[in-house]
Length: 166
Image (cartoon, rainbow, N blue to C red; front, side, top):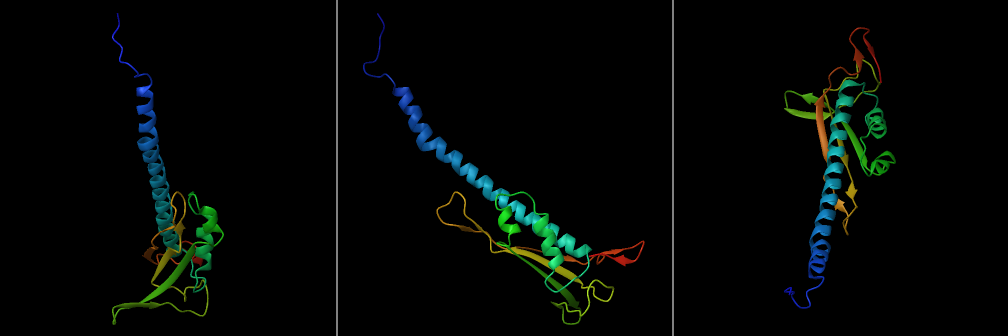
């Protein structure tokens, strides 16, 4: 004769359902949410570095860096809110600087022309700000601003032809 525990049918099924419903599913969703936040953070940080590199190697066109902003919007890495970036919902700022060596400070660069050897700033700062991550969370998560500063390397000039390109 078999010894069976009375009224214990389905206990393992119920325990598995509780474990999945109360532990495993929330942990899985939290990991997916964290992965998406990390992906977005990495994409915006990468975009800022790439934009600064682009600005450092291309001509100064105007004080707003319109050529850099349009390049960044067109060449943004894939991430969930890329359409928001391309549509202008995420702020991209480009600031050019001249270094005052005597005062040990950087001052905003000013020039009356564009893309010429006379209009070459010393450095550029590219920043991305104003982004709120609003997936998986009841309240939007304010992502911090990203900024990268690099020295102007060639101002878009081709060393072989001595021609500057925008």
